[in-house]
Amino acid sequence: MAKVRRTKRFQIRLGLDATIMVGLTLLNVMTTPHSLRVQRPALARGVALAVSGLSTFDRLPFFTPACKRRQIEK
Image (tube, rainbow, N blue to C red; front, side, top):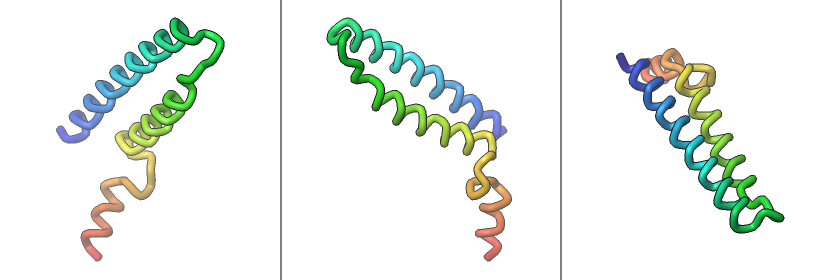
């Protein structure tokens, strides 16, 4: 159940981040089409989303349940 909740939370965050970035990009293109200022926020959100996704799907070795269990046993 916890895994399903984490996956659902990640999917919601992914959708919100995509919506926000599309909105920011449209706003940027409409206000200053010669200068794309949306690149830095997009990069920051992309990196944060990638780390969140890796953590959600247990791809980071230091965030897995087994690692947490080992730390508790110490």
